Length: 167
Image (cartoon, rainbow, N blue to C red; front, side, top):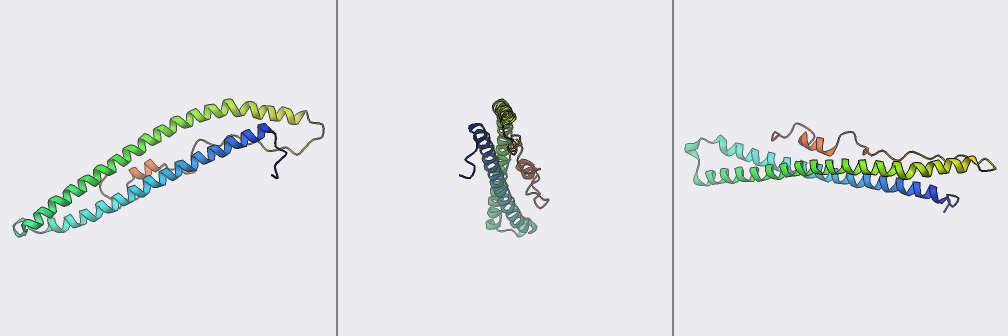
């Protein structure tokens, strides 16, 4: 416990910062999972589309009953995957809106909780007899994750590139 000289207020401020960092990391993990799922769905859809193109390239009169059945199955599989991806994008949007609301609530809480503590720490430092080196009291962490582009935007970009043509 090298920091045993910390007062309870400093500990409380540090705990709030650590909790906020944990929340940001959990959100980032969730974004990455959405992105991985989206990429896999796009790959699956592209693969099925390629198979479908091969079957569709055959003239209708030369197709066997098995080819026609396979064509229908591929169309259904693609449709299911597109629906699954649509659900994923909708779910990501709902999650983004929920996180915005949480961010607002957290910002209000931090403003009410931490500002009085930081002011108390400043007053305490001023009234101390021997001047101690000032402990840097940082502002509460930003409510924004460390990435500039949200997972939702990346998902809407469809795999983060133009490789997928389902959008």
